[in-house]
Length: 316
Image (cartoon, rainbow, N blue to C red; front, side, top):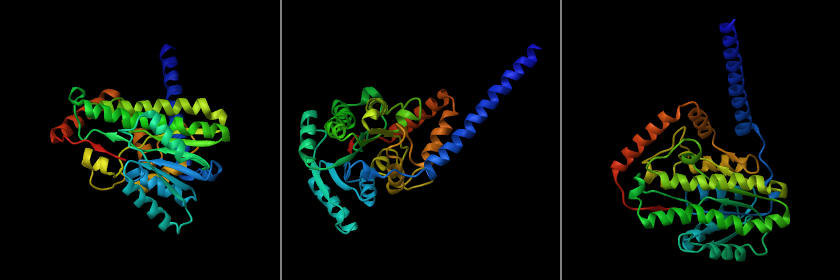
């Protein structure tokens, strides 16, 4: 009888585990491939994008413009901002308005960031904020090897930028009772249990993850949709430099491919991995014991460290 009872419990657990897996696959397929995107213009006619002159930020800015949204571009380089603005207007036959706000997230204080944004958006119907700007290690290194300059850069660019940009636009969205804020997180903080030799970078992304999910709960009743998006590797200059990724593949999309998936997800879950192959990787990682993932990540970090590089790379 005891053995039959144990077998019965095992069968029940197995059934519900299988049911959960099948349901997750069905729901994931619906969400990523078939669920209709929201009408982003309902939030407002303008979208703000940081880190918009290169990589994911630039691709997302163009994707938002393709949906008929005007784009306020935020970056540190006036020439690159002007070039991106011109490119957007030309591609969409001047039907899209653009505006540039020059902010160096490494040099400006939080209150300066907020003031520049508040001045820049004055009179604009701002409905969406996409925080993309970010910085990573130039290559893998142990925590004690992270110099003070890089440490300060990671904290200011990855944490302060998102915090103060969000703080600047929230009052407008609260008054309108609608808005969407999307923060670009990282698989290093949400998908895997640890990120050795990239510890500080992953920790700053953990901050973004918790900030976003808490704000989702805090402001949902105000009509504001806050979301953190969790990408894995994409073909950007950051990954080219840091991970030696040279071309796209099934699991490493071009920025434009990720951007299309990213924009489709705006306004839904508090946390998501927009690109289907990244979501598949996330699901697979859940099935692997943490000790194995930790060992793999440590070995990979040590391998990258051996390549050696002493120059930080700043996306903006």
